[in-house]
Length: 604
Image (cartoon, rainbow, N blue to C red):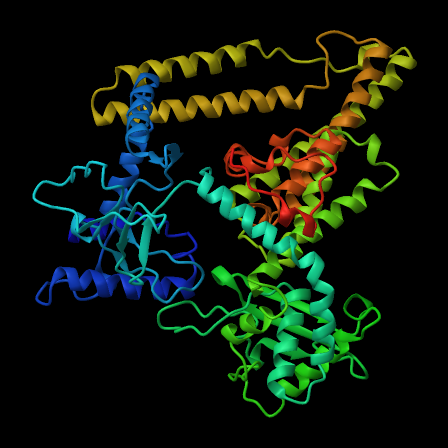
């Protein structure tokens, strides 16, 4: 395990999110080296991390990556067949006579714990799970699976029909139980999802009752009642998570509504004075994602006819008065009390239900606004998808679903920008060509250069690299084959770039009609590229998938697709179409409201 642990660290990207940041690198290295020294033993010669050179291991790992890339098409088929054999053997379970897909049937391998954000335990070494730690759960009539490790046995075999897990074990980092369960496409998950959205839909009939009671309680004499009402308003209108107490030595210091501290609020952040009712909220939410928004509690958005926003601002002022920055704002309540308070309005109502309700309701309202616009019917399916994603983005912003911008995204945006610039430049040239043809000066029109030699050279290079892969036996030959393959692929990319650069030209002098037709074509291409670039740039820091997977009722999206003749695959990838197969039969006029909670569950 000692040698493996050194490899775990060497495999980490030195420029990645864990070792690339001075703040997280310090935590990661400290935790890793503490566990590494424990494995080495007290008397080992290694005492100082700074003197450890992981370079040789890193070079070996990089070399192995190159060797693996030299795999032939035939070897890929063999590997895929092996993967499928494992899937068909372990990836399905017979439940009450129905064949169901199993989710995570592969055991998580040992490695370094990554965590999310500045997790205090990042870098610690995850131990290998042995069979004795694993409990299995299946029918009494089913045969016990053979333990794959000689000399070992399963920790326990159970026959408990009251739980859904098929196997469980305890990991060593956070001492938490991990489970092997049914896949997202299974009827178990489908039924659970449908119940979740049905419960959220019941809020449609109860939300006014809750808001009326909250408006009254915001002015209550008892601090506890005022804090409960204020917390309900925040969870309802700002879509914050409920939050709870955390041991910051064991978990990242992330907060929600009930665990907000005085330091997370800045009153009148722009120092405007007067009757300003702005508060800047800044804290780390779930997965250590930064929540930073300035809320104007005096705006019409949060007051309308009830002035609740202004009262919430006044309450926050009172809750923070004479408190240290490290003290909690909601010091009289906790998540349990808040959820208990919510249950008086609706059975099973918790703070989490509000997020599902607000996400679904917001998406439905945003899509309805767009469908009512005068130009909606003239939009293409691609343009409608952009508008759908704009509505999805509003939900993601509401729920603070963010993501870090990756290097790949930055490269993609830069490439799109360059292509857009080239298309605009080409359109200008086309317009000049039209003028030259009109003036009879066709001799000045530039013509396309031959691409034949370049295309043939790229094809030959790819064929040669393929032969090298098939003939490679030694590691040196495999490395050479991989390098030749990457060079050939780059040659093909260069060839495609060269073709794109002169795509607006002809082999011979074009006619006036041909140029006009191409100008129109380039105008459409530029519009599409601008739309793609704006869409990707707007969404680069927003995670549209999180709300789509967990918070927005999928039936809203399915009905919208049917109503607007947009292919469902433009909205849901294949994995989500499997997860939400129960939602696919809704009618085009389906709506998210309280009546859907009364519909019976019919598993597909």
